[in-house]
Length: 248
Image (cartoon, rainbow, N blue to C red; front, side):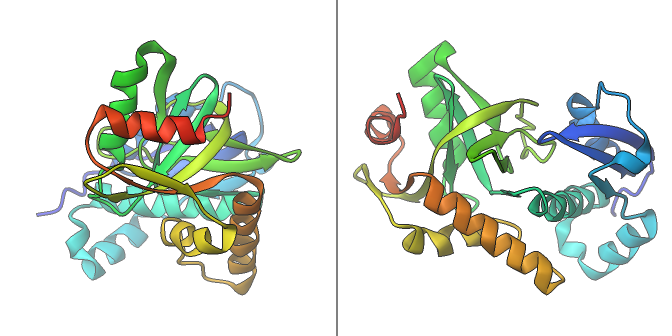
């Protein structure tokens, strides 16, 4: 039976340098969002975006999509999707990926669920020690500000809730696949487009939002190095990737 106990919390947040007014109805989403509460004073009408789907929405969605499991999972999925739609208006988008920072640059490793992107970034943590940390382990935000692409942590941070509420320059994006041998190649924006679009929020209700999504995806792909990598679970995989993609 689904857990639908309510913990309704309306708060002001700062996510990806955007003022977000979000109401959460289930405790887990609220807990994940605590590090993103805004320290600034601003009126609600100054919000860059509002996230409040309402309990009735969650009731109807649960009845329609019981396979999602429970209300907490539904809220996590739909609030994240709504934040992505807000982000589109501010030269950004989210990417289903594990984002690791080494020496001041964030590198995103993206793949279908179960491929091993989090396992790969864990190997980076072991290899680099204090030089590395995870900024977000599920859905980091990407934004272009004055021509520079940045990566941000978000409350939508995977089953282990690993995220940091900070901004880091984007170093590159790697699309992973399993392989017995380790290899990595830079790919063109055209080749990368389908891989990227598959791992971002695609259910957009208006033509305007779809146009924004396409524009932002194209922008990030033409402005940054994009790679395709086959890897196994070894330290050699880390070395192979880093030697190819490092920015310094």
